Amino acid sequence: MASVDSIPRGTANAPGAPSAELSPEQRLAAYRLMALVRTVDERCLSLQRQGRIGFYAPLMGQEAAQVGCALGLRAEDWMFPAYRELAIALARGATLKSVLDQLIGNASDLAKGRQMPNHFAFAQQHYVSASSPIGTQITQAVGAAMAAQYRKDPIVTVAFFGDGATSSNDFHAGMNFAGVYRTPTIFFCQNNQWAISLPREKQTRSKTLAEKAEAYGFGGVVVDGTDVQAVYQAVREARERAVNGGGPTLIEAQVYRLGPHSTSDDPRRYRSDEEVAKWRERDPLARLKAELHAAGALDDTADQKIWDDAKAQLAAVLVESEREPPMAPASIFADVYATPIPRLEEEEREMESNPGPSGGHHG
Image (cartoon, rainbow, N blue to C red; front, side, top):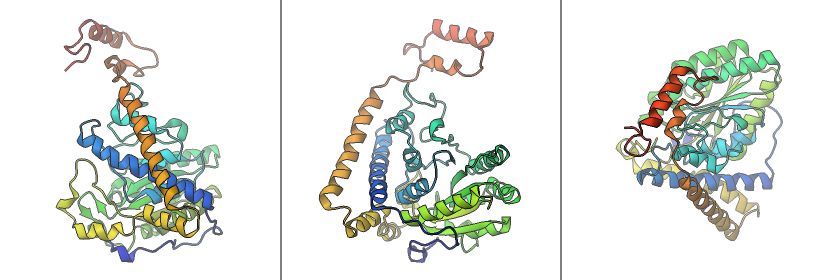
């Protein structure tokens, strides 16, 4: 696993477009969003432990990487997430209520209860549904980018994945196709040092994950994933290259997963408290807060208000989402066919005429 001291601080290692600094207002907005994401993240862990949601994959420590990436993209670009991209979804404009509705699985769940929690999708925000198999979104992103090429759409597709996915078949297939066809794809690897319990040094002997791009004929960039500005610039440069016919880029945002892999994981079984404490010194929220303080864009009073507002927003939306009724059992028959077929109509009538002991719920 990479040492905390070995990660480049605020730099990318490949040339690109001229530097573009985020304005103080953009940095403050990024910090406000990161505070909301951290608040939701911590609360969702608690909600799962209380049995109020079934599953959650936290992103604590990866907020700057995701928010910086989102800032470097445009609304017309398409996101192909893994299962830890809450900040990307919110930055793209998904509402907090739509996220909580999906985690709870209530009647307003946009996925209609057909996805496991944390696998949300938002069509209007160009945010494709997550899926559990490792790396499958990578080839999907490349295929969508090839379609954009044929249609001459000036967009990029972004595949999000972790260090563990670089050992998957889809990673290599996707990288090869992207290189051959020079697709407008950004491969955004959040190297959080652990693929569940497998440390990064047991994934590969490559010095960096970004250098794997060279074997497929395009560039790789290593960037400090705790630095919003550095990630923003790397993504902005990659996007400019892609839409101008320069092909794909693999960005390795080096971060650390401060929490568990998911609510099914106990990281204390495979990593030390000392390791986590060392990485907490590089907490991306603390870093951005210090930068804002130094620039005179944030003081302690304003900072406290940001966190209070985030907690109040989450509390209000959670109440609203938990008041929603569960998804109706008969919804399983909807959207299966454009025109309902007789067999499904018969099965739906049978369900309605033979309700389960809980008033319509079987099993």
